[in-house]
Amino acid sequence: MGLLILIAGLLLFLGVHTLTTMRGPRAMVIARLGESGYKILYVLVSFAGLALIVWGFSIYRATGWINVWYPPVALRHLVLALMLPAVVLVVASYIRGRIYTTVKHPMLAGVKLWALLHLLANGDLGSIILFGSILAWAVYDRISLKRREDSGAPPIPVGGVANDLIAVAVGVVVYAALAFAFHPLVIGVPVIGA
Image (cartoon, rainbow, N blue to C red; front, side, top):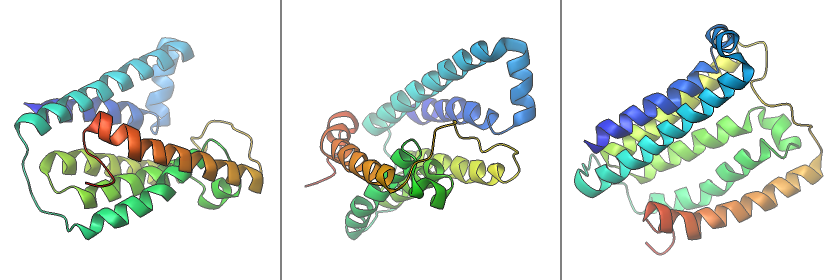
């Protein structure tokens, strides 16, 4: 039951995010609903998908855990170390500097690294479905950007090295918040000391 809800949530969440990569169908939806209507629908479907993902995964974790493989404990240290650059990359997509211009699509790079690391650290079926789907979507989205005329990114000014320093500092704070507060309290899995 939990896996089905999780998969339904992934279909909604990743489906609406995939629509943004298909500029023709996206333009038709905007023409029909208007820019505001499209954005409202996008947000509602995204939140509905995210809610189903969280709900389905929590049911799966509580009632239907299925181990596929057992990751070595040493991978936890690697994941813990590499999550910091993943978070910094995501932050650098909004606080743009040389990281942004060098990586080109730091949000997708950060999401891909995050998903890959979580795949390495978790050997259960639900995690493989969840993180594998997000990784596959991020790879698809990055490939689709090569065929699009626009960058797919919101128009945010690009600064210099000062923005990179701010992005790293904010990334460290977000990383710490995720590791010490969000992950143990919301996910129920302590990152450090587990």
